[in-house]
Image (cartoon, rainbow, N blue to C red; front, side, top):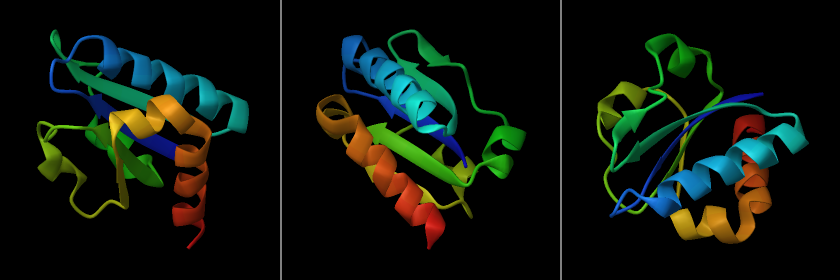
Length: 103
């Protein structure tokens, strides 16, 4: 399974990057292919390519704000969660992603 993710928080400092790190680590443990884009104080980092998005089974948006360039995910299966959900129970977030792809 391949997932692309975007993390973003209102201030774009710590929580954006903490969530990205948590998603990467948990996905690796669960054998899920992952690429994470952050939208923080430094702007967009590790930007997802059109090919990344096209090859993904699911787009995970972990954000408390509107993410930039969301239209590029049109036609993709999307799962939206809050940053807090990722930081408190990332395993459940990824399990839900697996369930959504299996449908």
